Length: 369
Ligand SMILES: *Cc1c(COP(=O)(O)O)cnc(C)c1O
Image (cartoon, rainbow, N blue to C red; front, side):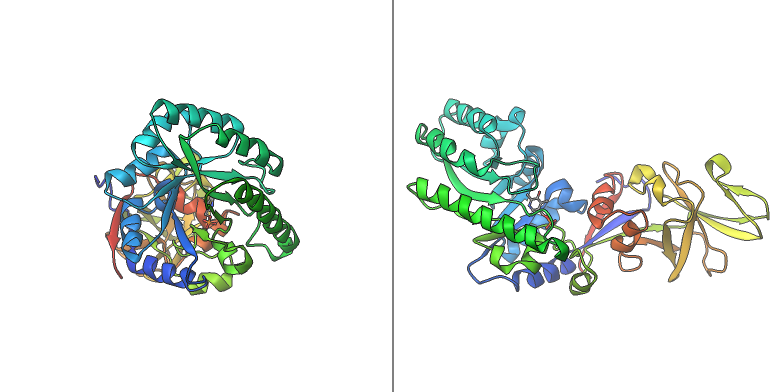
């Protein structure tokens, strides 16, 4: 990967292993684990992450789109890969690369059967996705019967699993709703199982489902954010280790006189003699303009340096008044301090968004700390 600037995203495989061991310690021995590595492994490095997890004995991977699965196959990943939101334009490639589609509507089911038959497939594995309250993708319970009827008419595909997705597994205030989702899913899975002459497995839990709802672990769990070090609560974040650390350097230091301004639109005006540092990371790298004007900060020499003015496309400026540092010194954007959780919270966001926003211009460096 080309290195455009000195900003790098370090991916700590030992932290990943720690998180994997922590999450799987919550499971019954026979429960399988699927690792969600969509969006480049939540913005990290999906190939390095998948290879490490394959070595640890992961049972399944999931990606959102076919091309993300192709990236893993090209890197030699052999473990089954579920594609959560496959697009019909990619169905042929999906079959060619042994990826397994989530089938979530009659339209997609019929379309996929047509392609599988055209490509002379027999028992091609598919996964039936049911909507139990998220209202995003999925069949409804009333679809079970027509699905079974459609399946009887073809030899090309075979159901490998039935699954659903929890809406608010991290939120104790929504426990009643979650329990409702779990029981609805159980009833649906029973209908499908009863109508098929072979065994299928079932799964419903994401990271917070693993932590909060052991009764929803079923045959397999699908963990994403937890593997990358975040558990959707302060308590669980302490049990996990952030995999990604975003690091940069000071390009230049400026002494600012009282009344001078910093950055575009003169958004910051200094009141006294101040020092600013310019860092080679901007909104094109994934640090949104929302972090500007003192909302976000970086850590330099262990101290908090607030972002001054607007975040530029390729750079941002921070206030280093009173911080002992020089040009070329190390800057931490997120990692252990601040964590991606803390930084994301400053703009009412979540680590999922901040991590996946880090653009492909930032070099990924895989390490073991
Ligand atoms: C992204 C995703 C997950 C992973 O969720 P986390 O909260 O990151 O563990 C699991 N299942 C589905 C269907 C998803 O889209």
